[in-house]
Image (tube, rainbow, N blue to C red; front, side, top):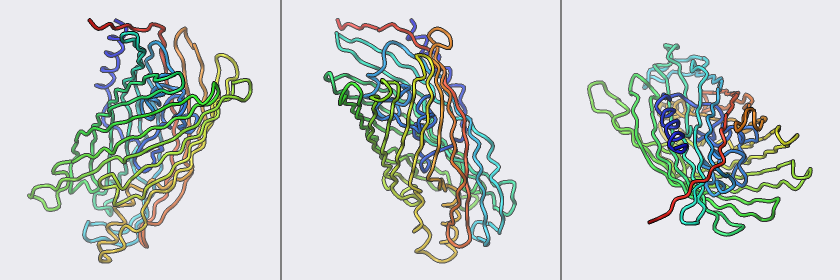
Amino acid sequence: MRLLILIGLLAGCLTCIGPRTIFAQPYGVSSGNNLMPASGGMGGTSVARPQDFLSAVNFNPAALTQYEGTQFTLAGTWAEPTFNLNQTASLPGIGVTPFSAKSSTPGILAPNIGMFQQVEVNGRDLHVGLALLSASGLGTNFLHMPQSGGTSSYLLCLELAPSVGFQLTDELAVGAGIFLGTAFLEGPYVARSAMTNDYALRANVGLDYDVSEETNLGFYWKTRQNFTFHNQEVLTPGTAGNDIHLGLPEQFGIGLANSSLAEGRLLLAADVLYLMWDTADFWKNQYRNQWILQLGMQYEVNDRFKIRAGYDYAENPVDDNVGTTGTAANNNIAKYTQAQFGVINENRFTFGAGVVDVLPGLDFDFFAGGMPRVSHNFGSFTSVNLESYWIGAGLTWRFGDMYYIERR
């Protein structure tokens, strides 16, 4: 009965979430685990020993074997990005004249919600997770500037992700998951497009190995996920629209976590991620493949209170070769379009805290982070500067029961 109640809660949350844009800390347009309730305070580190099961579902499902009983997590993040664009040349082909302005996209909310259940099937222990994840998002809006020619871009992708982890040996765990994504796209020029949506699948597999009692090694691999937005771009009024192909990249990550210091109270973790943008429709013409280093720590002050900190270095994925091979007019349009998706920040800083048993069986996690302001020139006439700060929290209800299923 409790399992049915948790499924009902998750389904109710799914129906209450509308399309919000998640321009907080993505790598390119792909969100990592920096917005998860515990990992969010540790720079997203979570491949080997995640401190919340949502992070295991999103990165390494084999790490679900580190959790027991029944859990339900409700988490959310509020982000305040500041995106400034400076355009110094006219682009007659798309109706843009020189302007300088801040995107009017307001602060945004990113939800991450899920449930975990430990199940024994014919004497075999399975660890099952189901989550709704904010997988990708970006938004810029310059409709308040007539000179922009109606420039406004929105992308949102939410994933429903069932995953399972299984302890293969005493040291080795394996896991797998399926992501059913629903994505919404509008722009980059609203006068020539409408918001459309599509669905697509991607797979996720992971391994987790106990090197020792203090050290874990983890690995995951996600397939690419490509969407087709039918009739999304209308170039000439009164004609049929063009299909837009856009996706999320194939990616993999490896992580190491160790808790041998400070009598086991200090957890140190490091992840290396690789995002293969050349496998993602549309972005393969905007971004380069991207390496990311995530570093995180967690210190248990006592049995109930934990403090966390983290740092990420993510290569700037912007491909500066875009808009260098066509005519001058087409090159300038290509650079201007690319700038709308310019997540250019390389450094991210996070911190957080966790409290066990705020109420009996209820844990609370808090985190915050920021990407300091940086600038980038897209050709000779377009430049962008971007910064973003975010704050989030999560509540996790823990129950101790294990469910047993017997085949007949």
